[in-house]
Image (cartoon, rainbow, N blue to C red; front, side, top):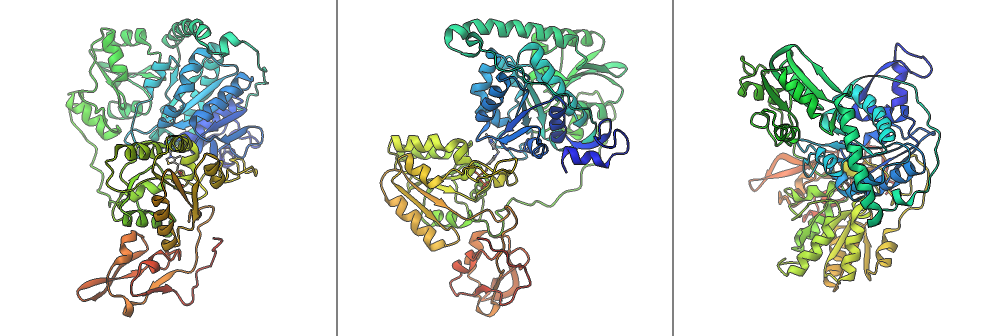
Length: 614
Ligand SMILES: Cc1ncc(C[n+]2csc(CCOP(=O)(O)OP(=O)(O)O)c2C)c(N)n1
């Protein structure tokens, strides 16, 4: 459901436009709605949980240019360019995306903006789907850029509109930080009208926009003066909200942590910082003087706590509320109990235990066979981020490193240079990740003649984040056709002489291609060419079945880790035989290729619709 269609289900407000209605939106949809109402004309970003749905929820609007960028830095560059061109612009990304965009981000604080520029960083405390849980409030401080932290969907809409206004009033980019619980929770949001902001056009001003040292030296003091003005603003801002009565305990908090505090200590005085950079120290000092004891509850770093302490205000925080991992109602209640701020101790019933479901490659995933081959080839595999990272887990156990998007190729080159690999060095990288951050690594490998093989797992989508388009697919986010990047031609153009394309469903051919590529000196590339089994619709062929009488229980098929292969009740010489779940089997044939007695065959007649398309 999109932000627009969801409004149809409402009872109040304008029947045609939904304006005035209260509708249930996720935090991501609410951010998007806020941007729509703020009159945004260019919205761009790179997919990444938990931020992805922001752009997807407004992709069908024909009055906004909504687009996926190749990576987060390009997204911010595009948004900045649009802003300087005079239109309000939005850039969205997950927290680690801001690392990629940080080069531009840090200097936008110097240039300032044209029309409003808002950057959304969706942080992921607890690392539900991320490689780290960095607290991006630190980026706001480092850059000198104002930071807003909504605590729910309603604020996500409201704060996004305010962020655009602040951006223009103070001539600064504004960072909006959500966290997974804000991004994905749903809450009621009152829809407002879209306010159009006619383009102001680009105004040439090289001293402001051309950051050569002599200009940048002039701009940094401007940035610092702006911070002073922003501090004045936040000290008196309606975004700094005091609530509660009891003065025994006072809690300073921001973002989702506020909701946990309110639940745990409904009567306590709370100072909620909607804008948490600059930190409103005067307001905090006045608040501290009105309570007997001051605590700070914040997710991840002691970001506020350190500032409050540095201002000479007594406060406690991380002694009771962990710096690692996500907070939640229970963790906050336990923290208050330990701080002796909750006399009755924790009252939340422990959640019932859930069944552990380790992530697995999908049945028929085209990423599986190449990793079987790499394991057999004894390769040291520097991996990257995507669905294929699951190859690191048993039973494939075929990936040795995974650090950041695009790191695999440079790390492979370094590993090869070290001479310590004890095996051929292979970098594995998905198509979207290659375009995002892998290309410079491959250029480097060619330039320095690294003796590595790069395996590009081209499944024609960004599978990990839910199947988005990217520059290699030939389709834009707003569903128009465009020129797809030809990976084969690109690798050749970069100077790789040995580039092979292989069908990963052909295990023998895949093994052969990797073996030959590894044997050729210098950098080589192997590209696999099967689409993701889930995109755009589930790719299915006839399911396979195990001929029980022919199965020798060798269990070779089990090494693929396919979830469709399950244990049978039958045994052979004391070992369990296997069977195949016909509902989930996609007919990829991998298990049949692994079966020494040829006991796995296509089902003779299948009632399952055959939709190969591959
Ligand atoms: C800097 C950064 N941006 C975004 C993400 C989120 N993310 C993880 S993997 C991935 C891309 C996966 O696509 P691809 O490389 O094509 O592999 P696939 O999942 O399709 O196998 C993205 C966008 C991230 N982890 N880090």
